[in-house]
Image (cartoon, rainbow, N blue to C red):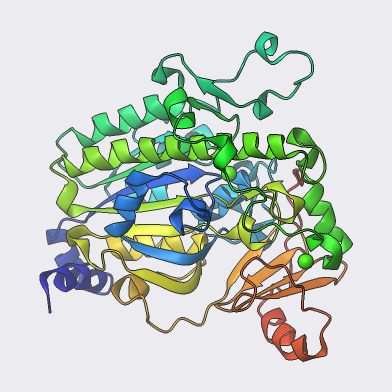
Length: 469
Ligand SMILES: [Ca+2]
Ligand SMILES: [Ca+2]
């Protein structure tokens, strides 16, 4: 057994080991970096030329879960599921605007930062975390500090946008004012300050970045990394006529957001290039922000005993399936690769192709840090066996939902989608990674649909409310 294996084995062992042993061995630190609306273009190199040098380096040190999916393809329900360890179909937190932390059953759940804190960890949160109001008492149970969010800005002013651009979220601009105009810069600096302090107990540090989410403002140097005239248009996953075999409810999801930037459908080529340019710039900006914190960790006394997790709350369309942003049940919205760097560099650079979800993160963190049982029963499965051996058997397809009765099941080969009116889509990723050919109506698909359909929720909790788009 190598030293790396021993390190990993010791953390896995402690979950079942005697309490006395756990008390004498200091628990590891945890650093969690959450990006907002970052898709797989850079992490899986599915779009050529997106520049993320810091995450590339971090990925070479980490295990990448290449088939990791969000529980819900929008900020608030995705984060509610990740922080609570509960799937949306069991809580009703499906949509943005649903206010999950003030309603049963999530209001009585113990989010993982609160469990860490109760177990004796120092906890520090900054940036975009739950992105929904958390009652003060619960916030105090979660964090030692009062987490500073900061918001989506900076935005381009009304005067500069002009009356023809009403939506301040959809006006890209290379920013020439100071970097500190960006909450991501200020929050990363506060995380770095935290890392540079000596600690007498283990810590959980969670930093939520606001980019690459709109508004597409980023320091100008990140826009300067790209020549919009050279970006690939149409995007690699786009195909004319792709919507022809999609049920009406799927087409309806596709039109959400569409008119905000380019009008329904493709818009013009110039608008498409402008969108991509801005998204790539904001992606490179998020990469730089993550890199600042990772570099600070590696230069700190905590580098050797800290696990690092990186993921985005949801994926992102840039014109694939005539769609912009997230809020669909297709691969582009659901895919959120998870990167995990283990102390000692175990399995550095490995890729795990098993289908996992962000709901699996809570039980994973609990096992790694040997935490006591949370106050509520969490769902998901610990990823520790896959971190030890990325090829370990794992017969758990990933579930993504977006509203009552909207469900998508992904196994290592297929994606099966079912809408509330019983219309369906089925895609074979072995032959069709862009999900262009809906096979649901083919007679030979029946046993596949039956097998995957049996894994969908039998019941959907009543929705907590919110909005589709
Ligand atoms: Ca998001
Ligand atoms: Ca199609």
